[in-house]
Length: 220
Image (cartoon, rainbow, N blue to C red):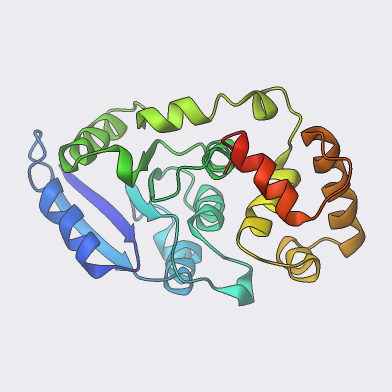
């Protein structure tokens, strides 16, 4: 059986490592790969109608060079695009981030077939994930399963917009830039920040106070 994989990662060495590991697959699948090293390259491959059924699987890194012209800023945005244009393609996302907010966002928005935190697995686990995902199973590393159970998420207190605002604040962006990235008004961001402060029990404070409380709760 031939397995066709789109590998999206800005580190060629990582892609070569993934290829070498997959050659050891137990079912002796033949692996065919196409690589993309940034969001723009990946975007052009994903939306191309000729590729609508070209890939069985995508290996998707979270942190890759953005494509702001199309509002594609990371692997999460690409994952949403993959679900739209390549609905039958399975996704394995790999990320160095292990904060609860990002992981929950990925699970909620993309529902990847595999989600691996890079510090939470060893190379052989990549092969386990590949084989289980191909078999129709889901593979999440232990820290993912732990983090996505945060009560502030599962009970609906912090919704998608709230979580994205917190992530962008943590990355150092100001209100104007956050509004542009999220395609909403600055007033919306201000109101959401007030809501977040209320949820976190912050009566008065700056963006840094929001981030401090999120870190204390293990959300960042």
